[in-house]
Each structure stands twice: as structure tokens, then as C-alpha cells.
Image 1: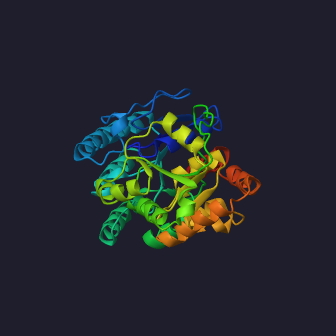
Image 2 (image 1 turned 90 degrees about the horizontal axis):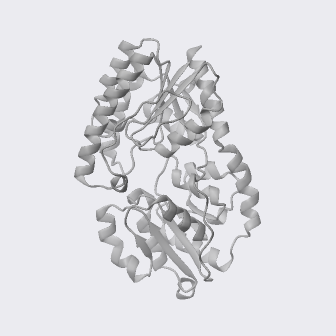
Image 3 (image 1 turned 120 degrees about the horizontal axis):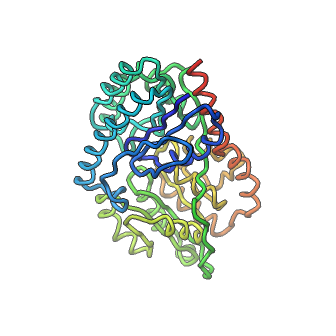
Length: 382
């Protein structure tokens, strides 16, 4: 069996690499496995497929027009490279991690059609990391839905990470239940050693990290801090890390500064992020909507208290035993503010998190994810 895991845009390259590194240990010796995304280095145990990367690392999370233009050119070139590769190698399983152009046009339909024409035996798997692109208006959702509907005939299996996502995928796009497969997203484990904690102060630090945009509720956190009583504010620090949409930053930067919130609106390197996660006391995810969060799955590895919105993607991942006192109403700054105050006044014992996070980490292991993925590949080939 010849397997190609492809992420044309590199949008979830950390997921790609974690999946590959685990899967490569589970496949049979007679199988071949290749991973390709724009940022991938050469991998062992497989014939490499090198994709092009035209965007420097520190600009990957940028919202600039020039970056988007470079990604457009990069994507077209990479699709041609993949087409050539799977035709030459006679690939059996093409596992796509994203259809990036679907957000702006539907030409990927013709690429998939061409793949089918040149490789009639090939089986195509698509992982839907999000049901809709983030920050989509109702109009954009309708357009995106129309584009996805056009590629349905070319996809043999759809992978999602939660039961809620499976239900939504079936309801939104009318995909057959038997074609949807729930494979939990693995918890991200840093490739470098986790640093020692550097802080020595007694304040409680709350951290919101990742690329910041409207759906992540960055504004909600700032508004929540504004509503905190003075005695609570004196006991905490709040930090926001990650490249931020211009309009969001312009609207809230002054308010964040007024509340002494540290807002690092720039690219954050992995060592800097790991240090911030180690130094934080509580991780905050006040999202408005989410299908699955890579940030949450990295944060879980640090075994710290998590304040999350009451969204199925979060509550399903965290399980029924997770403290309800740390789950807040979505789009409700008052609920978030009250939760922060409650935690500062009555912190949840660490043992509570140890007890409820251990089974979560086991369920969301990469070993479980790759075993299910490999079984799916075999089932598709009969």
C-alpha cells in the first residue's frame, strides 16, 4: 500500500508531522508512506516529496495581501507537484489535510477530477479540521458549502475529530454517516525539552495564545478583565500572545494596555511559546466557535487548569469529569470574568486536574489516532 499524506498549504503541518511520526511505526514493511507540506524536511523511511514554500517562517501567520498572493502561487505549484508524484508512484491512498482554495474558489474540484482520471484506483481521504473556515459570515458559509458539495463525489472518506463535528458534517453537507470517521486529534508534545519555570512572583498568570482573531474571543478576555474587582486584578497577570488581526488589535490594544495586559502582537517562536506555557498558571480559551483546537491540545500536555467556552469541541475533548466551574458561556464576558474571579479566590486543586486529564491524554494519543487511520486505509482498499 502506497500512502501519501498531503497538506498543500501547510495549515496544520504540526498535526501532519505528529500523525506521520506515529503512523510510520504502525505500517507494514511492504507499505510506503510519504508526508508532504510546504515546511516539511526530508523524512526517514519513505521516498520524500518536497513541496515549495514561498513564505518565510515569521510571516506565516501574517494577514498581509502579499503573503496571501505568495500562498496562492505556492499552492498552485504544489498541487502540480503532487499530481505528478501520485501519478508516477501510483499512489493507493491520498490523504488530504486541507482544501485551502475552497475558501476562495472551487477549482480544486477539477484537480480532484484529474486525480481520479489519471489514477482510477486511488482512494481519497479528506480530514475536515474545521466544518467551515474560521470567521465566516453566513454568506461565506453558504458559498463554502456549495463548493464542498461539488467535491463530494471525489472523496471516499471524511475524517473529523469529535462526535459533534461528525454530526455537523452530516447535517451541513449531507455526507453519508458511513463515510464519516471519528479519529481523535492527538495531544501535541513539544519536540524540544520543556523549559524550567522562570517566574518567582506570587501572581496568577492567565495566558491566551495562538494566532488571534475574532473567533478566539480575544476581545472577550479583555472585556472580562475590565469587569474584574480591583482586589482580583491585583492578584493576576494576563498575557495574550500571537499575531493579531489588524482591526481587532486596533480596537482593543489601548483597552488592554489600560488593564496592564501584556499583548505580544507578533510571531511567537516555539521556544518563546513553550516558556510562556510553562510560566502560565491558567490557560484561557474563550472561543466563540471551534471544531477542534490545536492550541488546546498543546496546552493539555502542560497539565494546567484550562478555562474554556462551553462549546462541544471543548467539552467533548475534556470529558464529563472536567470541573464545570472552569467552563464559561460563549460570547459572555461577564461569565468569563466571574470564572476568573472564582478561580483566583478558590483555586481548583492540582490533583483534580491530574485525575481528569490522564484519561484525556490517553484517549487523544497519537497511537490511537494512527491505528484508526491505518485501519481506515485498509478498509478503503478492501
